[in-house]
Length: 384
Image 1 (cartoon, rainbow, N blue to C red):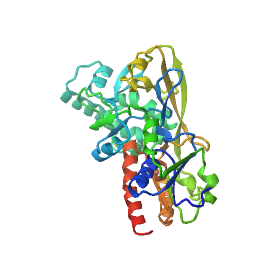
Image 2: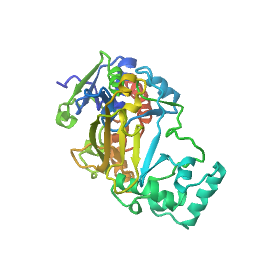
Image 3: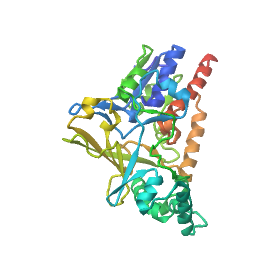
Image 4: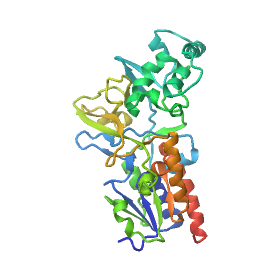
C-alpha cells in the first residue's frame, strides 16, 4: 500500500498542500498526501452548511491576510478572494467596543472626546500611574503599556479564559506589544492583501491538490501506518512535533479549542463576523457569525437564517485538536531538542505550525512551505 511511495506529506492543511502542489507542478514528481481528518484543508477548512447555505469555517474564523506580494500572487492561482476587511468588536460589561484598542475604544470607555495626540498622552499617563518599574509577568507587562483600567476591561478576563491561568502566572513574552491606535482605524489587520476565498477554503484546497501526480488519502493516521513507510521515503510532516518523536523529551504544552454551534431563525444575530467577550464570567472567548464573511452571496446573506459558533479555549489533552503552542522557556527548550533530532534525519522535513511549534498565520505557513520546497527541489536535483 505504501511500498512505492517516495514522497509522503503528512497533513493536508496549508503547509502540506502547498508543498505537495509545488512538488507535482514544478518537479512533476508523484506525492502522496495523507490526513487523519475526513477532509482536506486542516483547521482552515470551510464548507457550506446544508440547512442554511452559509459557508462555515469549521475550526474558527480564518481571514486570509498578508503583506507578502509573492504569497498573495501564489495563492490567487487557486482561488479568487472577495474584498472582506476584518473588524473585531468586544463586549465588556454590556457595552460594545472596537478592537484592537483605538481612539474610539478609549473615548467610549472613558466617556471622553480626545484627539489623537491627547489620547497618546492620556494612555502614557495611565500606564505611568501603575508605577511598574520591573515587569515580571503578563499582567505587569500589559499594565505598563496601557494602564490598569484598559487592561482590566479588555485584556485580563479574555487572557485568563484563553490560557486558563491568571495573567500573573503567565510570562511577559506572551504580550510583547499591545496594539493601541491613536486614530479611528477599526480594521483588525493592516496588511495590504486581505479577503476570504470566494468559493470557500474547501474549494481552495481541492484546487491546490487537483493534480494527477498528487494522491490524497483521508482518514489515515500516520502513526498507524508509520511502519509501512519505506526507509528511503522523504516524509514531510506537518503534525505535532512531540508526537512524531514519541514524546521522548516530554510532551509540549498546547492550547485547544471547543466549538458550540447554533442555527438561528434570524437574518443577523450579532451584526459582525466576530464578537469577543472580555468578561471573565462569560465562559466563551468569542462568537463567530459566518454569513458576514460573504456579503457578496446576497441570497444567503439576506436570508432569515444565520449560523453562530461559540468558541471556548481549553487545555490540550490527547484526542483533542492542538491549535496554539505555549511558547514559554521550558517548552521552547524541549522543542529545540526535537528540532535537533529532526535535523539528524535526512528523510524527515518538519513543515508548518505544529511541527515547528510556532503560531503562524496562514500566509506565514504558506511562505514556510514555499521556502522548504526550494530546499526539497535542490536536494532532489542533487540526488539526495
